[in-house]
Structures are given as C-alpha cells and as structure tokens.
Amino acid sequence: MPLTRRTILPLLLAALTFGLGTHSTRAADVTGFRDTGGLAKSKETGLPVSWSSTQNVVWRTKLPGPGTASPIVLGDRIYLTSYTGYGLAPNQGDQSGLKRQVLCLERAGGKLIWRKEFDAKLPESNYSGGNNARHGYASSTPTTDGKHLYVFFGKSGVFCLDLEGKVVWTSSVGEKTRGWGSSNS
Image 1 (cartoon, rainbow, N blue to C red):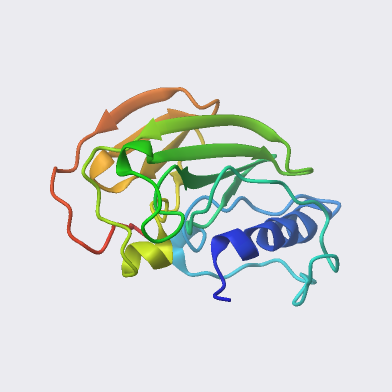
Image 2: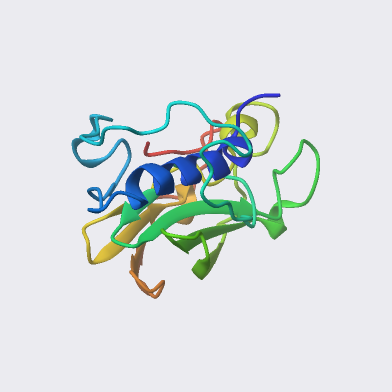
C-alpha cells in the first residue's frame, strides 16, 4: 500500500503534537512548506523517529478526506487541507461533487476548531491514475504570515483567510487544466 496522507497524516500530526506540543516550552511555529525558509530543518531535539498506530501517538483525528499538503502549525493550532466528493478512487464520483477544505485543529488534542469548504472551478484535471491519483486535489501546503492563511487550490484560485476561517480575498489564476494537477509545494 502506498504511503498517502490518509495513512500517514494521523501519525504525522501525532508526531508534531508529541514533538512540538509536550515540551515545557512550545516549539517554533511551522508556517509553510518545509518550515520557514523551505530548508526542512528543525532546532527541536528528542523527537520520535519511529511510531506505529499506538507507539508515540498522542492523539488522532478523523479528517473529511485525503490530501497531500503538509500541515502547518501556528500557536496552538494546526492548519491543513483536504478534498472530498471526487477523485477518491479511479472512475468514482463526478467532478461536480469535488470540494476542497481548509481545516483548523487544536494542536494539543486534534479537535476540529473550524472547517471552510470551497467549490472547485470546473472542469478540473481528471483523476486518471496519473499525478492526480498520486496527490489528489489538495496538494498545496498552506502558508501563513501570522495574521492570515494563504491556500492555493489550482485553477480554483488562491484564497486568503483570516485565522478564524473567514475569506478575506480570492484571486483567479487561470481557467486551463494542465493534466498533471497543481501544487505550490
């Protein structure tokens, strides 16, 4: 079975919580893909290097659907993306059902704080066993400036949300599909 966000995200979130949330002083925020500067380096020490469905898991939470974006951490919250309604398996569903979500979870326990859902601008690239089958429709890691979240959902656009999930602005990035999906990370 390939490692997908659906199979590893609960473990990743648990590792983030265990490694970042249980120290006496809280670790630095992770505000974008591979952390600030994109270097994928952490100053944290003593993080778990192995886990299973029970080992080193502090909490787990059910997500509405898959996605391959990295979660980001800001203060006591975790932000991530997912998708539902289409592309969950080859030849299943109709693109008109495709929705993308931005989720905000409690860092300490994984409880859902809020969920914002976005309709897809159609037609979208088909789920056909190519890149979309590997990374799906929520593959771009959100980022934050500490006041807003910025998410990219391919031709559906760029969305700026406040930290409570309210849309501040949107921007169109074009109408065409490229056949390989989209990602900024």
